Length: 119
Image (cartoon, rainbow, N blue to C red):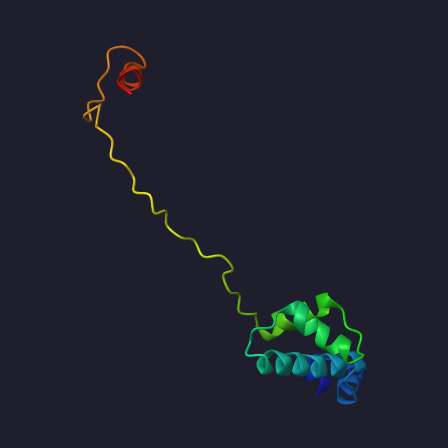
């Protein structure tokens, strides 16, 4: 069978007896915990707040690792706009149309001189 699939016998038997590593088990547990924290807080928490929760429970985890897990899970915090822009109460003054859409000139900067002499 190994010859037909072009796989060495060693690789075949190694894949049969493969045990999941401690790191991958820990990663799965942390991803579940991060997802639980995220959903418990109405999907508002971002990386810094989610990072603080396991640390307060006595677990050591890096901020970048939490960020990586959140990217893998495809979750992001809800970002609220902090400042609201308001329109100005002052109305824009209409100015007299000096050029009258006539862009033909005989001398350089003729339109500019006309504009500044009237104002």
